[in-house]
Length: 243
Figure: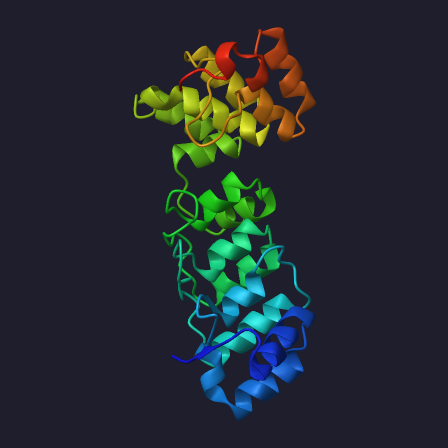
């Protein structure tokens, strides 16, 4: 597999074609130079990573992905660096449903590991970054849903089932935070009834459930939390409470 410097003239032409949705120019390049389908830019990124890079939503991205895969690009190729994310992770992190669908249609592993978030799946990236459209599409298309995904997506029945069989009892505080992160009042209410602490602060972010709900733009949930005495992180004694 060859590598191109991002400033290499060929790399610049490829990147411009990807970012502008010039599928015709891309296809012509790949036809004349088939080895370009597997080239790496950097060498961290494949061309599929470039096509799904944040902020995503490139013009004609589904056609671009299809052209790259048809020419031999590896839909499951990994980023080389601090994490090993696939292009599907990047599409999910950009809330790019068109790219998510195109990658899955091309055979991407919907539950691939390697996310920047705890080495998890594309769904876990989407959940962490509040990319709810991509998260919902991944679930629709069969992604594995853990109890934290369920809480953040407001899948209250799944959370209730996990609580009923005691498989999630020890995680109730962080599940409560996740429900507030997603802005889901019904799910948050269920978890509070099961003993969640109002002001839990997770190990990954200095925010209480109230902070998370405010960031999620969930005014009804914010009001409900305030009525029960919930506090923002900056209002806590010493700035935080342990999870």
